[in-house]
Image (cartoon, rainbow, N blue to C red; front, side, top):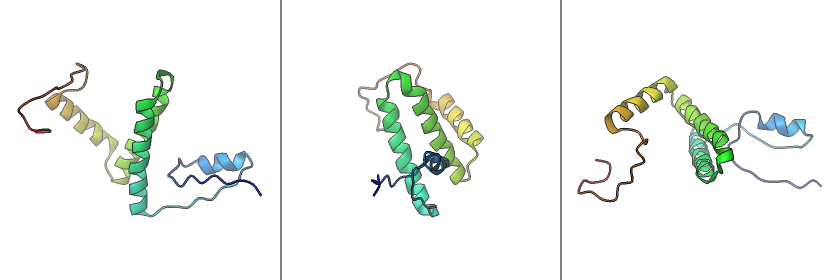
Length: 113
């Protein structure tokens, strides 16, 4: 009997085809809406951790994974990605970006206010 590896996670759409093309077997199913939402968020955290720990040579691939998940979450919530980019720009204009590399040590203002 062939050994099975249990993944139990959201995967990209073509992964079953890729597995099948190598002659391996798999079991997959289509998730319901609420489960899919939960798994999208779990996958985003997984990919963000991979990005945070990636060597410089792998940062581009990990950024692409995080962006793919960001776009998927937006689409699942019926939010056009152009709207996400617009809000991103508005927040950058209002609060700035991260170019100055600032590290806030303390303030008398409450967090996030």
